[in-house]
Length: 467
Image 1 (cartoon, rainbow, N blue to C red):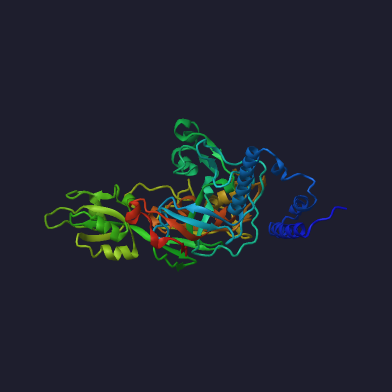
Image 2 (image 1 turned 135 degrees about the vertical axis):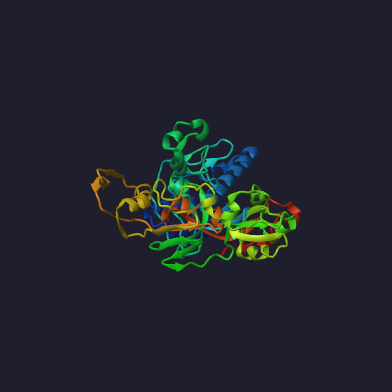
């Protein structure tokens, strides 16, 4: 019988223990069959795993060493990215000024428990599309159903959360903003599918390969939520607003435009300065009177601008010498965007929305016209049931139903930049199986509006924890 050295037993014991703990964590004891491979790698060595090291050709050996290192690195990165944390860059201003465009985050998968991937065969470090070649970065088979393993905690109210975009199940590749479902609501399904030159191919993406979004969790499963005059109410009580929440404001000036120093003082980005003029001086637009602005001493209206401001920035702006008056922006002066539920007229808006009830696992709702519009995507798209209405009767999986019991918990996500955030008001609830993780650390922050050595690196944000 072959004898094994003490060092072999120690290495096998360490890796075997770690692998066994991993299998238990994954709640899949079938994975323990992998111990057979570890036995052969560290002890019996029937398969020449490192046979290439014995080659006498130094160039070939050197090349194979590189291949071995690259494969090991890819596997390590893949496992860390799946189960521990991943890097994420803030792409849009929806969470300003809590998280800024150009912030690079470490997103903890352990905070809420990592998901077992729906598409286990995929290329690491890319979400759904390989760069340059523009092809899918994953294989559709094998496909595993939703499963989340034990984590350090659960989603809490006011957590900033990274999640897969719920409306990203169907995607028109050439026009992804607005999303496919909003485009269908605005222009009709045929207009999207019959115009490939503009919209491109329409494809389906599994949950874990939908685009990553980051928002603040405002509503929890089972909550009743309403927005009145930009204030969120949860279960009838006014919710605490984030410290850096901002709204759009109409700013009346005396004719003197803002200076660069004033823009920086108010922390208004260059992007937010573009096309921000609402009305020129001397304009006789009824907008001025509608918003409560009066004519100046010369009998003319002053110019109006629209800027996003936090509560702190608003207090500073009101004291600037060239500012006459500031009022909160009102959505009805613009062309209103469609809000969730799409295709059902509620009369709700960005600033006045609801009331709604957020689905909770195990809870049952009555199915009526309003509820069907509100929860159809939950029942059909997220919980994978067939749903159709015939002669006024609702059929779920072919059976007539008057109620429905939810299988998942759902969350209501909103951006802190309330007037410039496409969030749950636009595309609805976020199912628990779409939750990716929690941002915990800003490891780099770059300001695209400034040169590298003139504030281009936001040093005060480096290695700051995310609250």
